[in-house]
Image 1: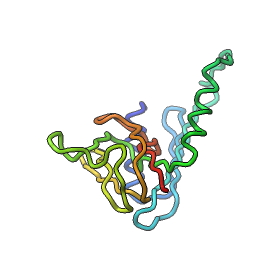
Image 2: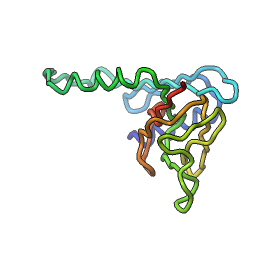
Image 3: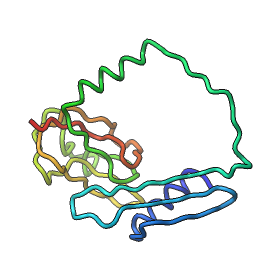
Image 4: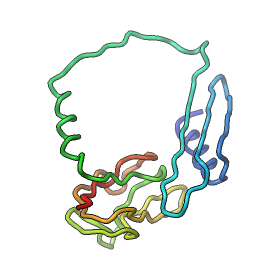
Length: 161
């Protein structure tokens, strides 16, 4: 079972409405758990655990090294602390506009309000418009147009003030 099969399985479980699924295929255990139904506009959260059977686990040396670059992400995190991160609610392909000929839904500096369309995520040939859950100003677009994205991946930074 490869990553694409696992992603398709997660999508299937999410659409089916099941709250918990446990599978064991070729000594690989997969457990998919999702919370109960949410109200419209709330993000779905899904947790996936993949565990290799103990017979196939191989341990290698772990190397940890401190680098001067380690302090840079901490500084960036402090900078973004006052912003709200809008995250992907599904796996798919991120598009900033509804078609190549139209302008992006939002750009850096745009003021948005709750319910405004921010982007489109294509999943399994379906185009899902993603709406803003907060009001504010777009500070940063974190994903390039036509890029594959993962569930819960940060897409936009919004300044709510």
